[in-house]
Amino acid sequence: MLSRRTLAIFARAPLRRGLSTRASGILSALDIPTDRELPGVYHGEWTGTGDILESVCPTTGEVLARVRSASPQDVRTALAKSREAYELFRMVPAPKRGEVLRQIREALAAKREELGALVSLEMGKVRTEGVGEVQEFVDIADYAVGLSRMMNGRVVASERPGHSILEVPNPLGVVGVLSAFNFPVAVYGWNLALSLAAGNATLWKPSPSTPLCSIAVTKIVSHVLERNSFPGAIAGLVTGGKDVGEGVVGSTDVDMVSFTGSETVGREVGKVVQSRFGKVLLELGGNNAAIVMPDADLSLAVPAVFFGAVGTAGQRCTSTRRLFLHRDVAPSFLQKLQAFYAPLKPGDPLDAGTRLGPLHTRAAVGVFEKAIERLRAAGAEPMLGGRAYTAADLEDGFRGGNWVRPTVAVLDKVDMKDELWRTETFAPVLTVGIFDELEQAIEWNNAVPQGLSSSLWTRDIRNVGKWIGPAGSDAGIVNVNVGTSGAEIGAAFGGNKSTGWGRESGGDAWKQYVRWSACTINFSDAAPLAQGVQFDST
Image (cartoon, rainbow, N blue to C red; front, side):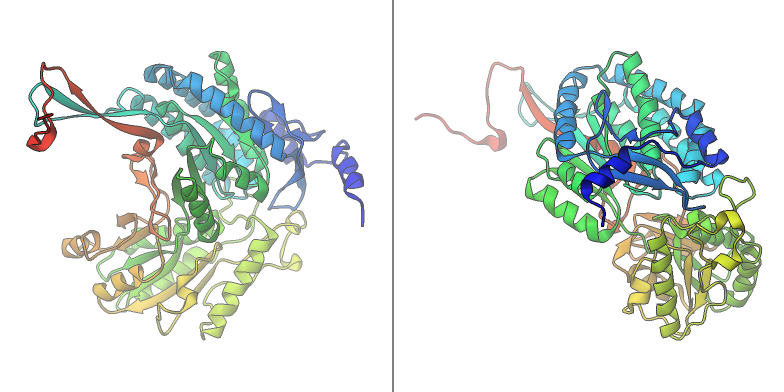
């Protein structure tokens, strides 16, 4: 076994491997060197003295880059710099903060195609989805520019003469953003845009498997901050693993933590932040269901379910994982769905025609295979897919990737107490159940711990009323004739129950990024007490 010192020497050595032309071209276009180790910490200057992270392409298995992550001291320094930056930035008028966001929006839009390609290269989602993810950041920056002039409080009527009550929002402090691998750009964008508009500093701890996306985005944002003479630590970065995340989550210098990830880790993050009375925003698991009624327009429903189940290779938090078909429509729906699955094959996510990309890691392939074992143990032989691709199935360039066959399985019996239904599998596995009444399908939809996204396909307004009403879907996203996946930025995004109750992006989500004060102002010559209380000295 090599010593830690020897490994460190190897890690510091120049990257002599031959990086593929496709990879080197994308990295070079984003000002990411391909011939040396990269610093993975930014707080106004680029540094990093921690362990090495390897960015691995999930399509080919090639190592794209080695990144020097944050040490414990790097994290402490970044936190201190973030606090200093916040104390300056909070005094900047909100419309001027909006102008900075406008410039960030323009800088991102100018590199939309290149960043989208990097998302495809490092994360594995197909090109159209990678570019679409960057567009989400552009869109939320647009939204936040306008929001910077409309982050209003309220004037409340006072019962006391000569008094007014104001509800006033002020900047909150430092916001720690812990993002997941599946959206390595957009989730940070949702948080950064609202946080900057609110006058906060933001410290980003991305997934350890997508450091290049975070470095590329931070370079773009930091150039805008520098051009406007603002400290770079307003949008800081600390790459690394679990220890780096724990350093951010546990710090009292972080006023709010926004965490996107698994329910298991999110539960621990919530406990730690609550134990120090910080604010926490959780975006966790999504075990999402689509329900198809007999009157549904299948020309719309089938493609939407197909995208929901297969898009990002089933690795979206809003991916369609459960499908409930009315008995009268099930045979026709499944026949049409099979026609959509039939042409799927592994392809380079960077090619415009590719619809099936890889899973992000080799471990994810193992998760997929265990899910298939659970299906077979329950007596369900997959009608489509049901196994990973072997090296013999793949073209030469893809044999080092993480490839599985998108799977559809119909179960004869639906038992929502079975872990098969209750556990989210982050892979393209669609489990199908057959129902007779809408009320039964709604009960199944709600019977899992998670509550992120849901979808009903119907043309009957009575069904719509049931679905969106008090006895309908209990998810945070309740769609009608729209799939579970692919939300817009204008509404708040988030889920209920074990999804964590957090809300990001549009709607009233911005209100979490400020501290609220109720301010009662007396402009009279008397000082009466509320509720008519008399408390004289006699």
